[in-house]
Length: 359
Image 1: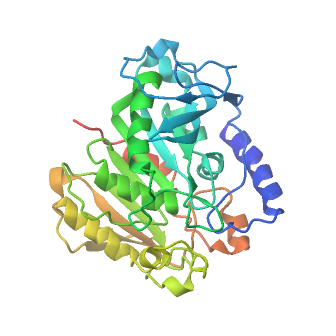
Image 2: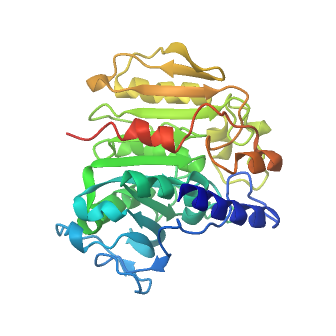
Image 3: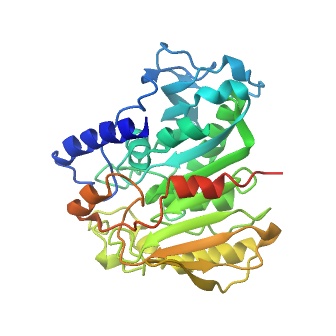
């Protein structure tokens, strides 16, 4: 099944790579659904059916009947804070067995939920491991003249929009209507989605059981932790998009028409930013360094609350990539840099997160 999925997605990527994609630095191609299911469009006001039409929903507190939740892939529109967000949702065949873990899968700048699903291949792994994958789509910051979808960050506070509140509404929806386990909600994402994941680690640390950020972390200020959050981030030292060392002028994202706040977040030194999050959590401020692999140096923070792991991986000579993606070689050819062969942000990321639960 996984090989079929990879082949299908790879064909989509090759086709997309032939198109004119100005935002290729952070986006990935349109993809097909896992081979075990057919894509459908559904309303989220009731457990998903296989042939309903897209509509807007609000959350409820009704306890779900797991046996009534239809497995497979659906798309819908979720209303939050006066805004409508598109949602791609994968529910595993095992959902009838009881509440399932949930992975929130956040896309990068200029991308969307469908592309992030294909880039990460979380849905293929979820079909085997039995977890729900939610891949929502953001919309553009109004100050971005290029109108690229993006998640709201501390450096980009947008009036009339609250993406953190949306994340919480989304969790409530999926717990209440799709049988997601509230104790096993995890967050991951690429680039802008990785940055947003690090924001959720701070601002929703009472809801997020564990998290993995790929190619981007940023500290929400102030950040008050109610508990220790198992948190892992990986970032390439040769990332030109979100520079590892905070060299803002090096990034093609810093253009004369870039949104206000771009220089601020692109100037952040990634391991230092992660270290500030660890310190806010209550870990010792100075990490212990070790060699995780030949090309991965681990920054491990000690004495974190509840003994949770808080680890930053620097991927030496790697670029702006999702390690383990089958599209890594193609995206390297498109200028995003090499990827480490020694970490899989999907399989290894899931193995890291799934060890932990709330309570």
